[in-house]
Image 1 (cartoon, rainbow, N blue to C red):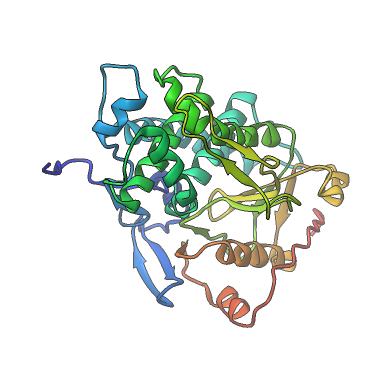
Image 2 (image 1 turned 120 degrees about the horizontal axis):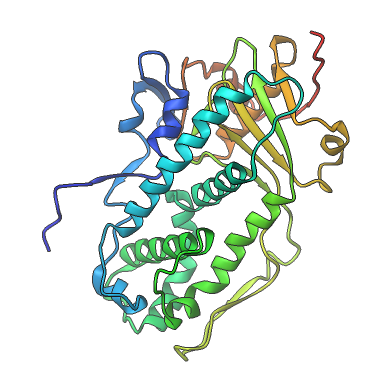
Length: 342
């Protein structure tokens, strides 16, 4: 079937987000970790793949009890949600820079930010590659015999999963049927459970007043996951009965910390209150980074780079500090100290 010539470039990191790290000319500096080279680009030219979220309609119709089927439906939903979050983040960035020691982040805005974090974890090529283990169970349950090939099967699994997560996060009825939930419900429950963790976590908004800048990456959510003693033995149980659900043996995945750089000047550090007691005891929601404590920013940038295997981006292109730290195999040391009198 001939590919369409519209909506080809589908971004797995939204352009509105990357623009927060562009300079006054609208360009961003890129460091390619794989090739070890730097270049200048624009948000429109980064973090996309052709037809990345497209669905195979012959497969899609197996899982949806609806007459409305579109190969672009996942990308359409994501772009609409990106536009909503973009408005919230712009307002947020304008307001937080004028705050003192606390910030009123309305519940509706927090909810949208949490959805953005969950979706951004899920929507990248990095996460898609993690889903390889689902190819065989998916094919068994869907009655496929491997004719699609491994790569295309994995693409379909990823995009169908995103579609179901969107349905759960936004409480929309996408007419997904029993077969769909037999395959994906175990994983959707685990992904959506992250929202419960986010809602009960601590939040520290970091405002950068130093000469340096936050960077971002092609996998923007920098998460440290809790150690799971069952992780080495966790199993996915699959039966040949189409109606019987897949299920995991093992606990849900949980995070201890998440760092999201929102712009060159603002980031949010989210932490499990029990796991990160020193941050909980600080009892503040805003911390300012200045030149004297900019080691925190440098180490957060280093962590952002180490958690990524593709590209990092910044407005000024100054990657030298963290590249040197990476090559010397230094681990990021996060020292949260703020003295508002300085």
